[in-house]
Image (tube, rainbow, N blue to C red; front, top):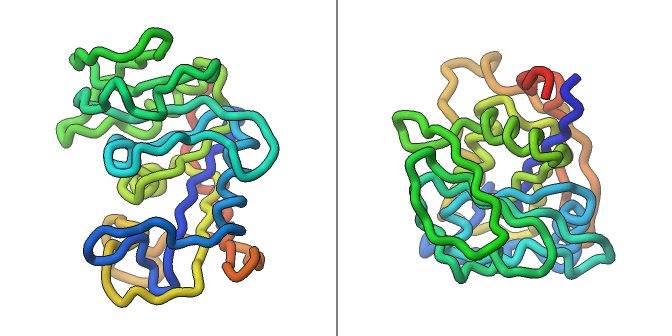
Length: 220
């Protein structure tokens, strides 16, 4: 065991959309679903988002809707696109980390920890290398919060122990899908995700157990 616990989460409509066709997404989930997200944040060492979410939503990534400590905030930014004024980088006595490409030079606020990792040929940094780097810095309970591309990459790479899917009681009919994975030819080749369903307010939480399929990271 490598002692890591990695949870991915996203909120979606009944028809598995995270945003409308125009890109509007605030907020698909209601108050109870958002409180669950903040509860997750309060239980982990670090919350991770990709650069797309950081630029589009400028999230604070703090705990506000429930009582609990703020996690370290981590932004995956291989190409140095994150502005220094991003709210995730605000100085508030909480650790802030940016996962940057090995050759990236970005001007970030004082106190931000820059973790430089080599990117693959597609420009992305491998999820397993991100987890190794975070675990090596003492961050072992990790929430992969968004966006869909980032959660999908961690899921496809076998880097999640659990996946929390919050289904809101709405149907969008079109828009961005909640997950994007490589296609499979046959049903039996699909990713197996044993799950439990919980009612949270007017929403359904699908708690999917992926621990048996998570890749081992070795001794950290």
